[in-house]
Length: 368
Image (cartoon, rainbow, N blue to C red):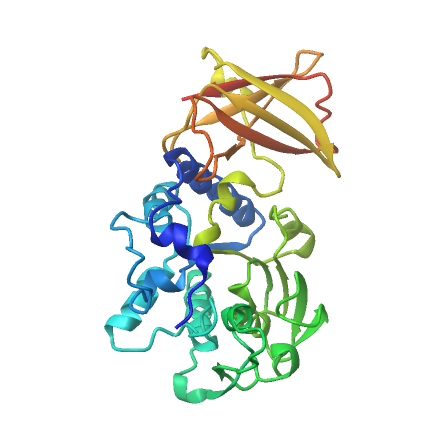
C-alpha cells in the first residue's frame, strides 16, 4: 500500500481549520445551493476521503494518527445547520468496510478505484433525486489500469499497472469513455475542462466542480445526463449554471483540500436582501474596496465580526452617491489552517455590472 504524503497533515491532526473557516464553508455552500435551486437545479456536495482516513492499517507505524476529529468530520454539523445537501462518503465507505467489502481504493494510487467511484456516484445520484447506475461488482471486470500516481512518483522507472474495475459502456473505452457517452470538449477524464454528451437515453444537464477524485466519477455522470460539464478550475464559476441551463450542480472536493472552500468563494451573483432589514442597527467596523473581474464588480473587505455559525447573519449595504441603498448577503472568506484567526473576517461580493453600478458606493456591514 502506498499513501500520499500530502494527506499527512490531516492524518496527524496538523491542519485543523479555524471554526470561522468551517462556518464560512457551510455558509458559502448554502448560498451556492440556494443559487442552484433558484435556477431549478438540484444540488449536492461531497468530500472524497483520504485513503488513510478510511484505511490506516498499512500506514507506517511511526506516524501516530490523531485522535481528534478531522476537518471533514468537524465540518459536518456546520453543513447540517446550514441545510446543505451533503453526501457523507466517509459513512458510505466505512459501511462497506464494516460489511466485509474491500476498501475500493487503489493500492498504488491516492484515489478510489472505479468501483469505489461508482459507489460515490450512485450516492450523489440519489442525493440529486436521480436513478443511480446501480451496477454490481460482477457486472464489470478487473483489467490492468493506469500506473498509479504514487507508483509513478516513487518508482518512476517501473511502469507496473494495478488492476482496476471497468464497467461496459461507461469507462471501458479510450480516454475512459464508453459507448454510453462521448466527449464534446476535452479528450480525457484528467483534463481541466470536459464536456460530454450521452449517446443513450438520458435527460438533464450536469455541472460538476471536481478535482482528481472526480476523474473516475466523470464517466458515470457523463452517461447519466444528456449533457454534462466538468471543471477543475478554481474558484468555482457557479454562475455558468445559468448559461448551461444546468438541472444539477455538484461540488466534489478531496478531504485534504477542503480549505479552498473557505479561502476561494465560488463565483456567481451575490444574493440581494432588503436593505431596510438592517434599519435601527449599527454597522460594525469594516473596510471594503471595489474592483472589476470580467463582468463582475468584486467587493472585497474586512469586518470586525467573526461568524461562529452558519446561522449568523451578515448584510452588506451599498449606499450609492444618490442615496439609494442595496443590500447583499456576502460570501465569507476564512483563513486556511496556517492563517491568522484574529478578530476580523474577510467578505466578498460579486455583483454583475449590468445589475447596478457600484462606483462611488459606501459599503456598510451589519452583523447579528
